[in-house]
Image 1 (cartoon, rainbow, N blue to C red):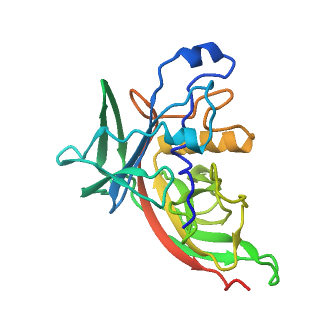
Image 2 (cartoon, rainbow, N blue to C red; image 1 turned 135 degrees about the horizontal axis):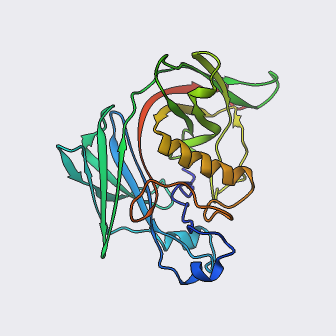
Length: 284
C-alpha cells in the first residue's frame, strides 16, 4: 500500500505570522493534536510538536517531531480509558494512539487530556447525530473518460442546525479518509432539504505520487458523510483557505489555523458518520 503523510498531522504549524520570524524561532514548540471520535467507533489521536519556520519542512523532519510517549485519557464523564499507541505501517507517520473500550455515542460529550513531560493539553467535543448518506455514485463527463467525480445525495433534517464534512478514501491507495475539496458544508447555504453535491478528491500533503483532484476507473471509493460541530467546521475551513490561497498549511502565512485545544494547537472533534462504497468501472 502506498504511504502518505497523514495530511492533518502535517499541520505542524506555528501560531503567528511569518513576519514575526524572530519570535517564532525563539518560541517553545507547541503540542499539535489531531484527534477524533466518531459515532459507534473508538477515539484516535496523533501527536506531534510544532516546527519552527527556521527548520526545513519535509516528510523526514516531520517524523522527527512525532510524540510517542504521552499519556492520553478520553472520558465521557462517566467512563474513561487511557489510549494505547500502535505502529500502523500503512500510515506516515506510523504512530497512532487508539481506544478499544469507549465507543462514540451521538449527543455525548467527550473530554481529551494529554499529559506529556511537564505539559497538560485538554479539549472537549460532542458527537452530533449522524445523517444518512443516501446515495453516492461515480460520474464521468464522457463515457470515454477514465476519470470522474463522485456525486452524493442526502437529506438535511428540517429544524436542525447541522454542519457537514464529506470525506473519501480510495481502497488500497489511501489509508485514511481525506476531507473532500469544498466538502465542508453549513446547512444555512442549502436551498432545499434534499442536498446533492459534486465531490472531488481532497488534498494530501507530501504525496508519494502527483496529486490529481479526480477519481479514476478502477478505484474502489469509500465515501463518508460526517456531521460535525461549528469548531470543526471552522478548523477545516481555515485549513482549506490555506490550500486555496496556495499557502502552506503547515504554517499559515498570515494567521493560525483555528483550534479548540487548550494548551496546544490542532483539533479534537466528534463526528457522526454514514458511509457508502462506490465501485468504478474496471481500468482498461
